[in-house]
Length: 408
Image 1 (tube, one colour):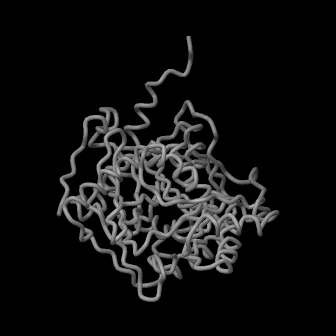
Image 2 (cartoon, one colour; image 1 turned 90 degrees about the vertical axis):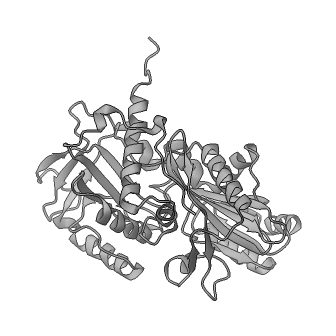
Image 3 (cartoon, helix red, strand yellow; image 1 turned 135 degrees about the vertical axis):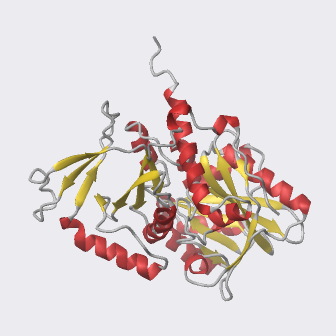
């Protein structure tokens, strides 16, 4: 099954961005202060390798684990976790010889978007001795996963600097990261979701026994326990009894101040749909996750280190396909997403009912990741997908420039 890709009028590029001669200046941000740091490095390697050099001037901007923005000594060319870890170590070693990047949190009248200060090999904070030069960008492409990148923080900085960027805005990014708030919005929209409870880390620290009684009394085992603000299945556990539940909450609370406990959908199939667009989003063909042998669910190992299967398109009936694509667009609109998003579902095999699990506003972007694979199966190749995302980011930014910022 293939889905014809069209470009709705509301997502078309304004004339000033459609020059066939001038190459757009794209800054690819990757790394970040997140436990998904290596995943971001792998995603960025694929994006950088597939951006069309005839259409774009490309600058890679690496954000270290400590939060420093730098021009990396070399762009990432990695495809495994081990290669990504070595790349991160290499960038840490070369930091003093590199260029640190500073983005002023204000619009620049002369279109100066980023300022680089050449490192001198001296103290880390000795910036005055280096040379300063300007870097201009037409758009930023934040290939960042998890907190401090996918959660609205980078998006807020780019908004303050008035820099166009790829992907969802501040609110949608923040809601897309916080699974507990996301599920409240899904429920308000009338979307089907599994029952859940949210546990604050202070509550867990002060009243472990009370929390365990509440969860055990409100849910039948098994349940899934996960950090509310994280992705790539990091910190997620499946708990089959009270003791496993306690251990799972302890683990999730190490990654976030909020922990989500979610009822398991019996004998579930894991289905994912990619969504693309701004005001008139489109849904891809659906895909199905087949966790690798030995994996109880689609955890981090199943995603990145083991041979999990991805069935694209998913073997669904025509009616199921229509319904899951409709639900994907409704979930996308529920959080006011833009640019891109991957919506994950659980399908009860026996009852045939759908449950919206979550939306990911910056899904994995390696060539074997589900999001680009779904669009490939829908008739949109990886490179063309990147072009669409850049066009959508520029179109959304141009539309915002028409808004009034004064009451007079």
